[in-house]
Image (cartoon, rainbow, N blue to C red; front, side, top):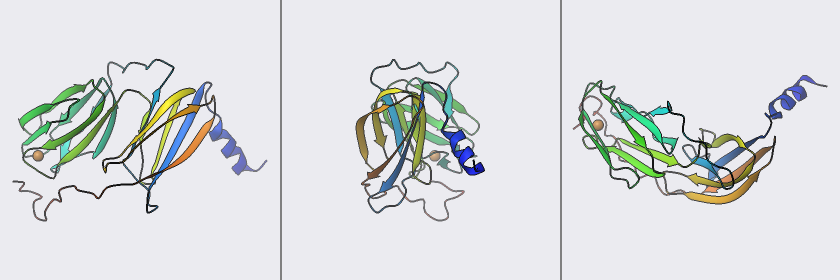
Length: 209
Ligand SMILES: [Cu+2]
C-alpha cells in the first residue's frame, strides 16, 4: 500500500458514532465565501448544554472589533475587552439581546451571556465603521467558513436542520441526515448582497471621531 493512501485512510476513520460534515460555500460568481455561519440543529436528539466555563471574546483593538463574524451556542458568555487607548461605546439594538456598554474605558472587559438564539449586530457609537456580527445558534455544532469557503463540523450521527447564514444577507436551510462514522461533503452557492460596510476613512487610525 502506498504511503499516501495510508494517510487518506487514517483521516477518514472517525470516532464511533461521530459524523463529519463539511460544506464549501461559493458566491454566484464562483468565489469562495468566508465568514458564513453553518450550523446543525439536531431534530431528534437533545441539545447538550453549554459548559459552565464556556466563553468567547470579541475585543476592541485598533478601533475595530477583533472578529467580523462570531458564532456561539445560546447560553455562552461573550467577553468584550477594550484593548485600545481610546474609549468605545459598544451596543446592540438586535432583538435577541439589546445591550449597551457606555463609554467603555481602555482595559475594561465586561461580559454578557447571550441566551436567546438569533443574530446580534454589534456596533460602536463613537466609531461608525466598527461592526461585528454575533450569531447565536441553538446548538453546539457549528462552524464558520474559512478563506477557502469551507466550514467543517464533527457531530453525532442523526437528523439535523442545516442552516447557513452570511452577513451579506444570504440564508439557506434544509434537512439532512448524518450517518455513523461517515464524512459528508457538500457545496452551496449563496447569492450575496453588496458589501455595505461603512468604510474607515484614511487617516483615522489614531483619531476616531
Ligand atoms: Cu469605538
